[in-house]
Length: 405
Length: 123
Image 1: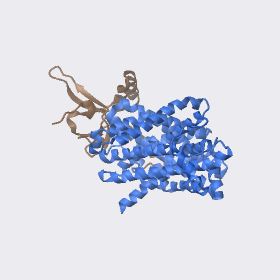
Image 2: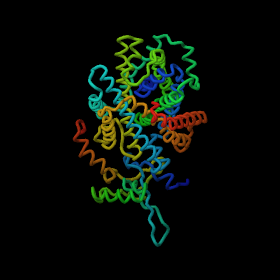
Image 3: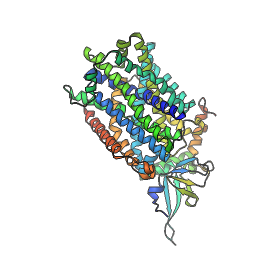
Image 4: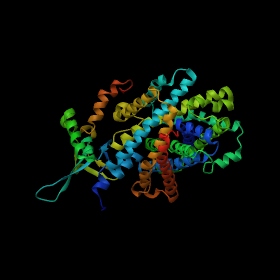
């Protein structure tokens, strides 16, 4: 029975944790610009994430080591510095984006500029990490994150043409605006395949003391959680395809996005949108901040656990403190959150090969995985998707700078 | 008896102390050369100065000077004698108590000077 609850919670975590500022904004832009044509990118991203999450859970359950542990131990300190520095920079940008998302949600209901919300939001996020436990962060915010299912409800409410939606699930060359199309495709991949998610998951499996008996749960959680989570993002994309695309609206700020749900669900749509944006971004912000601390602690061998009081793992706790504090600054300075979102997602996609390809080497190392190494399907699928995302990202950098975003 | 390679199986592995506490990673392995015999493994090193040295000679000497200015000998890398190594698996278990070493000198400094001054940090 308790295993059933564990599975259910795992799936809920996947659904509630999937949507955040990046996946919401990129899905809305894709729907507005290309109606349903980019649904395939969401599905590809969610599939790749499911593979990676499953791998990281398996690594931790079998070896009792996390991904950063293994990266440092297997490849040595000099190599480890590369994913460490790249990941911390990417996570800093994405964290600022998420804090900005929460701040914008608060601006929408209060009328007070998002800039002034950045510090209170950062403080609240920090305080919950400081006083809370791993379970609180993982389960608490994710359960609240189920509110993001409003995007699926909203999409169904508008009776989308299912044939056309299904056709969008197959990749196609764009009929117009090729540069913008590929830029959005890579942004969606970057938003879906977030390294922080599977690093967080691998640390969680060690926090929760997983062993071989958790492998089945791990597989179901990864598959179903990320699968249903992807559906939420598809819901947002379909809504944008039905609301923004026919009206010719181009998404250039978060303030336009409540229209997605108000046109389907009226006043409640506004409430649900603000709640979704605020909660989803807040949950992501906490996961990113703590993952940044995990990466430091596990890479350098410090004592770490989100379940310990801060006095017992000072370096770990101060790592997420510093990360949160620094990430508040761009928001406080009034950065354009949507621009930051787009840049972060492309940078995140570009960083994927650096993080994921070494992970694949570890997943095929019998000293860590014993008889549970990767099969060829997982190896091939993840290598292909990650290289695709990396190449697309590098190609789209010039587009981004030229104003393609 | 299985083969063991110092770089593959010892360097960069998680150090675990007598009580199972995490005690840093094996940041360096020190060999001792003596005139009357072959070189032998002397110590495992733990510390930021050792790590900086591995990134580059100049960075290493810079880190060493900085460490001495701030904390003197306290901040030099800590050396664990090879004969205290008890097991080498995915981790390296050593027969020391991390609290009796200065491996956690930065951790302890941060706890006393920063964490305990923040609300909810004194527990």
